[in-house]
Length: 313
Ligand code: FES
Image 1: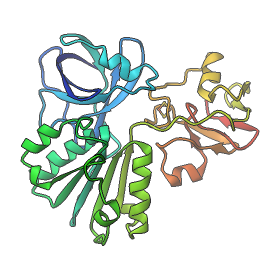
Image 2: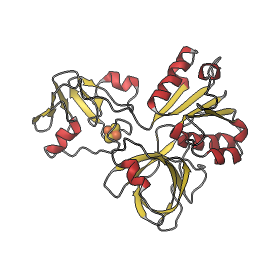
Image 3: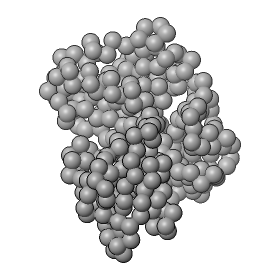
Image 4: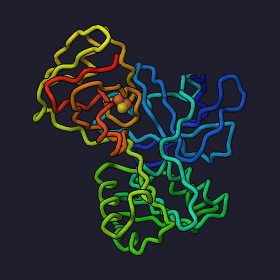
């Protein structure tokens, strides 16, 4: 855990602020790579993940951009209430969305606030002279953060803006004719990402060429939730998970320590081994193969296909 001070807060677009963190003790911050995120420990006790969007070679600061989510469960609202000069705690950078070394083109697709890790990738690719394109899609220029920074950046020539109220992106044509060594990176709202990824698949991109990072998922209705049981393997205790609670909530309620962070199936903090039973995976964190193996699940959001899951805790 790192203690940082908020050196500056800037408005980047409607409902988007950037926060610049510096080490509270003035020393250098740990190195990070493009695509990394940090856990931000908020004064209200919530922990939220935000992608770093400054250039990865910078060691004196971390910058994140945060959209005020109208459906905020308390995270983005608390970020928008932070003040310059405040000291907070953050986690060390972690990277679940790394760039791979590409002999072909790297196509970066950002939807809305999904621009944050993509900016960092563009900085990295520019530095090594890579062949890349950045496509930034947003409803309008007014809602698009960091436009000025991109226009002034050394990689400006690689960037294209696609504003829905001016001229929306023609994604099928941008993704046509993939080369075998090309790679596609996409970050944004889940509807945008699903569209880009499905279009890419239809245009012949292979699964290994597609890289994604979800920063939020559409809340899933509880309407089709059933109840199920979880059993703690070490004690044999059986706990019922009702339709309106998550497995993590049910376990925590009886005193089991389940580490939580995003509570949306994005970060992987809560991943728990499953010894028996079949989970119904609802997360975005595990790969398709990991989900198929059914030997771990994310109790913050995933449920069960069988009446009981036996957990390795
Ligand atoms: Fe983030 Fe469960 S807490 S995946």
